Structure formats: structure tokens, C-alpha cells
Image 1 (cartoon, rainbow, N blue to C red):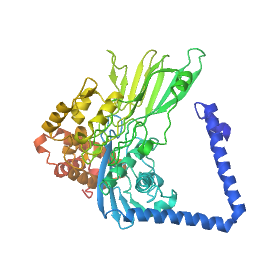
Image 2: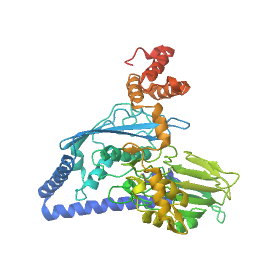
Image 3: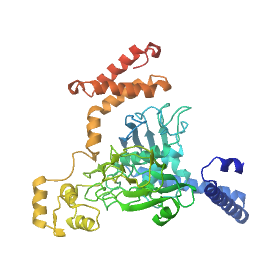
Image 4: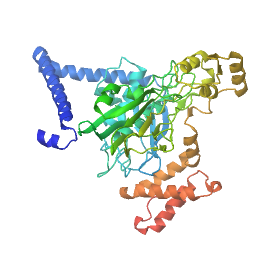
Length: 501
């Protein structure tokens, strides 16, 4: 069996090391359980496990009970549902009823042709769905005991044939991105219930970078994971978000630059925090990370798994602004520069350079209320440019210091730096949702649910195409144009029947 495993991976020596570590962990866990049973007896051990689960459940219910009852809807997007695709919408309504939670995913897109689908099997307490809830409850009370008893306080509504409950044989291999987006979606919904305790959107859009190349010295093929690119946590009422790693990506660890240069066949030109990436706010979001590296060999293949946030950026709350978009640039600053956007696989040659940046986290509160001294400190660290300090925070920096009179005049002239509404989702998403309103999406969800599962993704794209062709004055946003496009599709394909649309 081991031979079969190792024959089906690109780096068997490395994977055998990983597998031995997993086996050792299981053996250690088993030994510890046997030690407890030997010391206390099997019955006491079983009772203790049950008590720990009950204790975590009671803690979770107390946290939920302290939140105001209500329904809190929120939607977010992945930039594409396929190559050259449309935005992929995830919709969650968090319903708080005394000490219980309901997560209703009605309004999420139909299952995709790409592999972003989440294989939950319709399980109303599937682990992929409740990680974000665990993060939220633990943030509200860090004494929460972390075990599966927490899951008892929540159940999920998962419409069949959607990306959160796909039907076989949907592709699911890239669901990590969907899970990360779901974490942020959960944060956004809960933010309405506890705005003074929740944060802006976590930094996102950074990929796991891999390189497949040839070592020029030995001729040996190298397959290496360079680093996971992560963003910081969102700003919140008490403080700035953590930079570079935080929120739902705090567990990630980067590979040291020296190791990458010695073992991955590349030269690292820069690895650090991305300037101007943090979402502005009274308390800004965390900065994203950026990596610039150069290849040495022909046919060097680069994969950037989980690329996203190149269009729809991470939202700010309570007047905070969104974080910057992620970037993926080939040969930056040259006449061969190419913006790769959400490309995830490419081949480069010797001397070519790749620049990848993770998106920044969203801010909290009006950025024009931020202490100018804090903006100056970020400027001195190289995290905020002079122009961004002026435009985003209303802070004028001259001669290495804050120009106080100019800053006060600029802030007075512009009033404040916040957008209207609780969320600031950024101009790209705002423009998209001016066309694709909640009413349009409600009708789209209803119409697609009337179709066989294997027709839904195709029908979604056809309806989007039809809306694109409408003159702007014809786009009323009340769902009528979506229903008309759907009726035209049914007329074109009689085999779909009358349906429920």
C-alpha cells in the first residue's frame, strides 16, 4: 500500500516524511488515550469525554444568548466561478434565536463546473460549514473550550445542487478557497450582531505558491511549495488588524527565504508586507504579504492555488474601507509585464520574474478619525505611501513629519473618509451589485432551483449574458429582467418544461 501511495506523488521522499509524521501523531494520540484509560478506567474516560462536549456546548449557548436575536444576511463573492467565468456568490443568513443558530445558505450559487464546490453531503453540521462559527464564538469568548460540542448550537440549511451542497459528480478539489471565503462570510454576517466586537474582512486572495523546475547544477527536477501567501486580520473597534497573518490564516507558516533559494531553484527578490494593502480605518486592517522571485531554468512551471480577490476586495465595516486587491504580475516594471489576474498555472523562462501579492484586510471605523501619529508610524515603516496617507486618511506628511495644519484643513474640507452604510465593499463590487441586486439574485435563485442540477450552471451564465446585453435604462434591478431571460431560455430549450420559474 505504501508503494502505491508513493508511486502516485511527485516527491515521494518528501511525502514519505509527511506520512511518517502523521503516523507518529496518531500513535502518540492512541498511547495517550490508553494511558488515561489505564489510570481512570474506561467508564470514567467515556463520562469525561461526554462532560467535555457538554461543557463546550453550554459555553457556546451562553455566547449566542448574549447576542441580539434576529436575521443577519450577508453575501460575498469569489472573483470567478470558472475560467473566464462570472463571480461566484456565497450567501449566508445567520439567524439567532435565543441560544441557537441557524445558518441559511439559500441564495448561494448553483454548483460550479470548476472545483470550488464544498462537498458537505447535506450534513447540517458539516465541519467545513462551522469553522467560521467557531472562530467567531472563540473571538467573543476566548475561554471557549474547543471541541465538537460547539457544533450542537447550530444547524445549516443547505439547498441541494448548490456550491455548498453539490451533487455527485461535482468537482471539489479547490474547495479550500471556498472554505476561506465562507469564514469571511460568517464574520460579515455576525458583524451586524456585534459590530463593536467583530472585525472587517480578513485578508485573502493569496495563493499557495508552488514551483516545478530543473536544478541547473544537478539536472534534478525540483517540485517545491514556496510559501502560502496570507493576509492579515480585519481592523476592529479595539485595535488594528494583525499584519501578514491573522484571522482565519493565523495558523499558516511561511517557508524561510534561505530554504526557498537553496531548495526551490529560484531567487527571492522580495518577501514582506505589501505597501498600501491594508484597508483604511480608525483601526486599519492587516497588511497583506507579497513575494517577488526570479526563475533560473526554462519551462519553470508556477502554480498559484486559491488565487482570488483581484476584483472584489475585502470589505470594511462601521465606516472602515476595503483592503487592496491581490496582484499576480509577470515581469513587473518591464515592457513584458503581464497582469495575470486569477491565472493559477503558468510556465516561465530563465530570468523571468513573478510578483504575487495577497489582498489586504478590511478596516474598522472612519479612517479620517485615525491618529495621524499612527499613520506617520506606518509611513516610516514603509507600509503606507505619502499619497495613500493623504487620500485614505487625510494625513499630510511633509519632511518626514505630519503637517498638522494641512492635515486639519484637509480633513475639515473632506468631512470624513467613510462610505455610507455599515459595509464598504469597494467600487468594483458596488458597481456589480448595482446591476445584480438582491432582488435579481432572489429571482435567479428561484429560477435555477426549478432546473435539473446539470442545467443550472449553464443557465446562470446564459442569464448573465442576457443581462449584459440590456441597455442600462432597461435594468430595473427588481428581478423582472432575470425572469424574462429565464423564460427566453425555457422557450429556446423546450425540454426544460414549464418549471417553477
